[in-house]
Image (tube, rainbow, N blue to C red; front, side, top):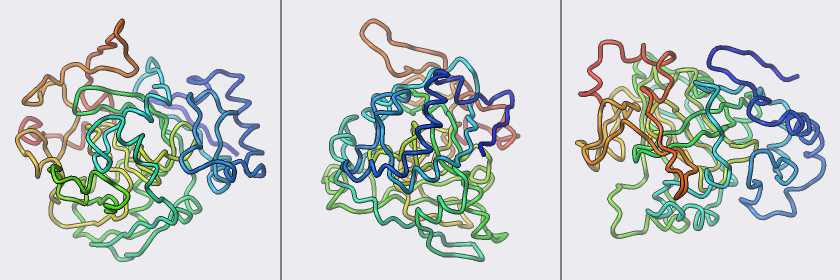
Length: 336
């Protein structure tokens, strides 16, 4: 049974997808697990070019069976946002393990092996251990969240993610009172990730990110295993990535292999490279510019020569009502 609730910032899936496609999708999902569609397709071929084209997509059996039980509660900060077409969201990415051009991840990430996949959970927890993707999906109901994604480079998208709240995963590890921050680590596999072999790379691999404990436990913080009703494409951070919608996109670390609860604020990739340009918090803030460009406006994809699709950037990416209290009393120019 699908559970649906509605709040001011919630919109249902049938409001962003046509009614006929929405109902066809439910019927399609009920039977897709038994069709064996995934067996005939190479890795990374699950997705159609648009979210509405559900019949053209395919899903591995393990994913489809859990998708049918998903909680189709979509979360966004406003009903006016239009979904970014899947083709744009999967072809225009920053994933520097595969190169610095926006199309490098799409071209090169197919070589990354994502099965089997485990995530080590350690640090200040009573129950450290190893979590595999089957456990992640088997023990928790998938939820769909439609979130804005705002890049620090001043472009943005609107993406429907599938995943589970990070808080559910952290709670099962039983954090101790010493757990003040959460550190995340990306896969380190240079033989499959050419960007990690580059002599010109500035990042000290493996890529690491971090959140304060209250940020990690916030209901909007998601561990995503899918997007647009399909498994995550490799270039978007398969098989498990973080999504923190009120922060700049680089905080939403991809292809996670380790989650550590720690006492001290962890060192993270971009502040380590240039602390004057990239802060640990990296909350979306139109009042605090990047030293090399303004953050007051953003280019919403897709755009074209005839339409730059420029829009005003919202404080906390539009999620201020939900998250502003986390930073009460903080100087957000100092702690940017």
